[in-house]
Image (cartoon, rainbow, N blue to C red; front, side):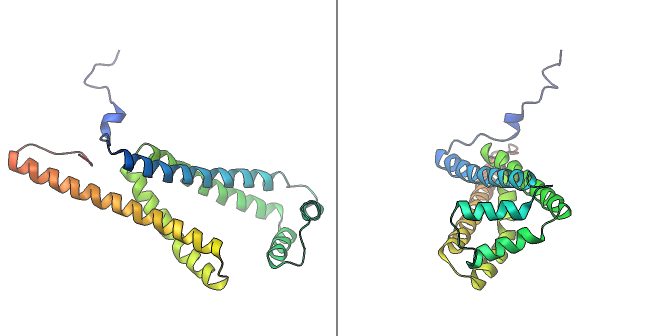
Length: 189
């Protein structure tokens, strides 16, 4: 039996947020991050099942089934990638995918439970992609790439706004505590 003084309530370690718009916004981002992780898991499993298989034959069947023109630019990139893939490349891709998926799932978990560290993680991980996405958009401009950048920048700006609002609330709580001489320790009042 653990004495009450030694019990740790993890939910009390992080203040409760009562702003439902805040919760809804952060959970929407968490859901998006979870979906991105799941897409990579499913794609990774699909690619990983192709090891020790005739990848070229599978690619041809895939293109025939979907009536895809093999001379289209994007299809040519896909065919070139499939042609160069080997077991070593599959393992490297699997490791990178595992790291990416772990990051996405950890971020989604933290955002779902409204953890400040997850908001910082979302800012950092989202900001890393922006220069690469902009460079890709400049090389091959299209609506999809523009939409991806807009969503990513929107998420980063939203998370930065949440962190700035939390800092303002913390500062206001600290000033109020100083005026009444009581300690403040919560990230968000």
